[in-house]
Image (tube, rainbow, N blue to C red; front, side, top):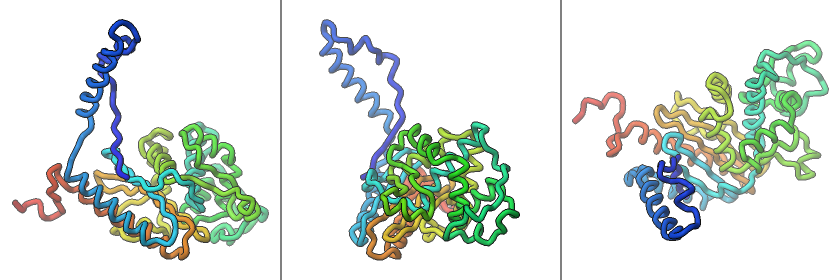
Length: 331
């Protein structure tokens, strides 16, 4: 499904008096509806040729969906126009390590309020070490000291689970969820620490939906949550190089701020792709996979198709001429 969203401001003549139920109120109400529909229609930009590109993007994603032995959810948002593609956008998916985006959002929220600093120190403790902690597991307990920035970098770069759990303790699981509530993200929940298999068996999974993860990244991109300096630093951190699925079919050199997630039967990747002049949010989630490799390939294929569309939109005129470096002199 493709949607177009725009921000509109009611005209000056749109006042409560017009729709007050008084003599002739119903007629005025009908007139108001007509005037509003006319005014708002003029505020929605249309480009039929670009709409065709979005339709073809939808067709490509539909093909991937039909061929995947599993369940696929997608949310793609053009941060320039507000247009979006949505597929099973409100289905709740296990997030695996992608939930760490929400954790880092709360970390930076507490930096902004002054509750924490990225230079705050932590001393490695044996009791904090859990499985799949490639960096933390090799450090010396009781001796090695790390900053919160060090821990956050480990979370993004190698998805270090011990570093993640330390940050959960520092910021508070309940505070992560309170932040999601304040943003209207009722289905995005951090409900257990990493590698807490008992909690997972009890059904306390870390969850979100394609739409909600897209909205979180949109709010972060638009400065709704953090000031300009922290917003820039947040996405610089999230852009740390990592093994993931969104970049696989995107050329080297494109800045991508994302966080993948992996569990048995689950593959996810959510982030912002900073195409010059046309950045976009992409969140692709899968579950019930027969083959996890197929899920990874599906995410990468959808990402590649989306990138190629946004790259053309970024370099094209409103009429559809695409200008690449080196061909500007051609008639």
